[in-house]
Image (tube, rainbow, N blue to C red; front, side, top):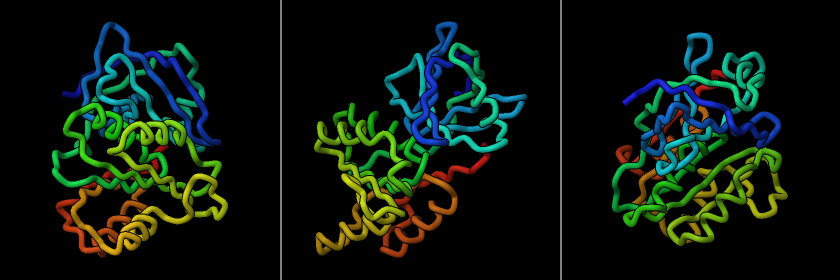
Length: 237
């Protein structure tokens, strides 16, 4: 059910040169009940911009958003000038890009800030007894674009049901990460096993161009479209 929320900005952290984490606490004893993968609608000058929730379902008194800020974007300009303690209005939660019950392993093929709903899905799923085995392939361009690495690696180190690969498409010296695009690296891992096991559910998230390219590469592997779920992040600032 979509509700109106008045929140207070309690955290504003630069993750990269143009990607920020914003944390909002709910006021008036409201609680946010949502399904991991859903988004909130930020209200700015009577218009709304959607941003996926990063936090897991069990956190109901606050939520985090990861937002790429653009020059002269309506939401970007508003958030750039937002200070700690400011009141911010939202509607939500909304969206149908959520985990489906499955007996298959799950593969996340993600780029950029598409990590937001996926991180919520992963952390929520790992609190449940019936959590599937999950494999995250997260694509970024450069080392300077990486964030959440320690958090994700820590979660994976404590949970045998999760593997994490951060893939850098425009770097050769990647330290603990991998060089290449997410779809190519996933295919490489399948080739190493000398099999292409199609018994996966795939979740794709990122910019429209990247999602479309990854979707086609997965289809080309012979994966049924019914096992592929996706959400495109439209650049609207």
